[in-house]
Length: 422
Image 1 (spheres, rainbow, N blue to C red):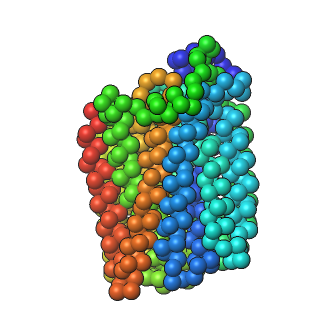
Image 2 (cartoon, rainbow, N blue to C red; image 1 turned 90 degrees about the vertical axis):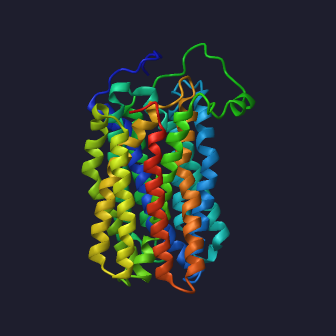
Image 3 (tube, helix red, strand yellow; image 1 turned 60 degrees about the vertical axis):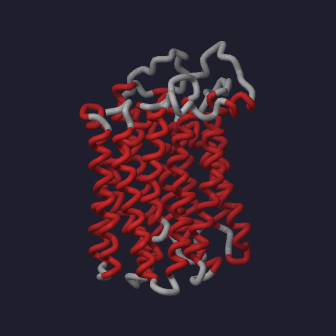
């Protein structure tokens, strides 16, 4: 452990990489589950007629569960007096729970039923978010202000690499009814990167003499004052809008490729599409974070959000004139904007974080803006597709992609309302 001084010391490149390592496995898991595994398992459980609605509903239930859990785990870690550090115990316990449930979820066959499947999925959400809230606070805990853009770039790089590996691995491994190999890959990634982060990060302990507070006091002071911390809420709101644009389509690419473009093995092709999106974002995720330390965050948000909005609108053309080549090209364009946005997003959130000793709770609240779209967007898209499917499935997807573009555009424009960051 390092001393409990309040000013973080500069991080070396290996420390930056170690700090961001766990984010690789976190994103690997959710790319594999949300884009490939969950749609495949749900289609097997409920059949083709109801798969869109069921996928949206189950994804939304899981994300809704995590909305409360992530900031709660963060708030508890802020008050932790463990000699192992405030964040580490939550990381270890959450990861072990996560691994146990992701393996159990893989074994949920048709006989298990939708209710059991959903409960197992909630177990995965519990473990993942019990770790994620406290983990997110390691950035404001340990990264000096001049290095926030660079640290955000590292997080974006691990996010894009994890999403890329997760989507591609699941696409190759998943077959209807066969999910255990993907679960083992996810588990191995979580355990290895957990070890890397635990060994490589010198977490500061809770400041000595700080008074413990009750759960009731945590609840009363849970939300920062919006009058004082207006920018924090604008960052959450705009990030939520961009997330709505992303998750409106993320879980439905597999169905779109199979039902509209009629490709063979849509699970595999969906993994390739996600892979193209993420691979295209890797260069911009590396560059944009450090660049924003010099030029400011908002210009890069405007540029990256505009690119994502344009790409979302262009996806419609792939349905009107079915062309796998076109959809992969548009996916690459979307990825360029996505990578840059991810790199700047973390830094922007840390720039406007309320001061004080509640970093994990507040980063957990910011994490809500990542998770809330996973509640609302798939449910809305699933309902929209189910509603329009009897008349025109292509029209349903055109509506979904249009809504995605509008969300991305709105989240980009409203960044101008953030006054405390440039």
